[in-house]
Amino acid sequence: MWRKAGFFFLILFVLSPWGSPATALAAGLVVALTAGSPYPDLSGKPATYLLQASVVFLGFGMDLAAVYKAGRGGIVFILCVVFGALALGFLLGKFLQTPLKITTLISTGTAICGGSAIAAVGPAIKAENDEMSVSLGTIFTLNAVALFAFPLIGHAFGLSQPQFGLWAAIAIQDTSSVVGASSAYGAEALAIAATVKLARALWIAPLALVWAYVFHEKGAKAKIKIPWFIFLFVAAATFRTYAPAFILPSIFDSLVNLAKAGFTVTLFLIGLGISKEMLKRVGWRPFALGTILWVVIASCTLFAVVKFA
Image 1 (tube, helix red, strand yellow):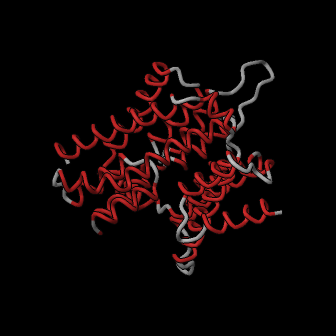
Image 2: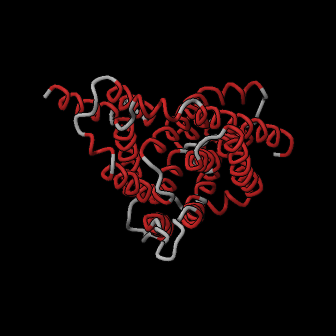
Image 3: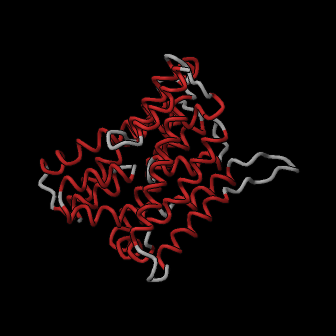
């Protein structure tokens, strides 16, 4: 009884102003490794469905016209980061001998938009719960570091607000951390970072479809499992862009907040699915992969922004 009451209390906590995706994952992990989950089945299909629904609702926060306008200015940087992170990620994964699906998840999360990209790609490649958990944990740990480190680095290098906004948008994985770091730097940096980040996030859909094809099971009767919720994500973004004028922007903001809440609860449930045995089985390599990849991408993009932006 006490475990169940604590379960619901923690959900309320991670959804409060004191909570965050990172604390949600950490809270689930602490419960899983100490008392154990009172609802172990929730870490399976229910968490997956909630994750997919959250990705769809995130689409209501994307104005494709603004994304296109911002993307034109940062398209070279975005392309370099997306393809560079994927190529380097798979090379590092081969060197560190990390499992292929974990390498794919971490590389995709670094290339596009962190946890949201992992949430979209995971079902497409049929990733297991432990693979999702380790990948998400790695990405969110690095995003927590970026949230505090990037403004300090930006000031140390004397970056202008447009320069910092561009750098944050292309070097920080998760959208919430991009917004947090750029808002601490200034209003102009936030405006640029938010729109360029959305342009980068549009790569979720094509990459999810590509990985669904690459990872489909071989055989005469094998079928590609199409991640249909990705099309709903694109449809939501399209509707947001061309919605009738009588639909208030606050409605879309509410839907995006609902998506963020769902994503936070999902991370809590995923954390509950982690076990000591799983951590021992996976080891240190995924975190090393994510850290090295992120440091290289952040350093190279910082040099590019200082030199060319």
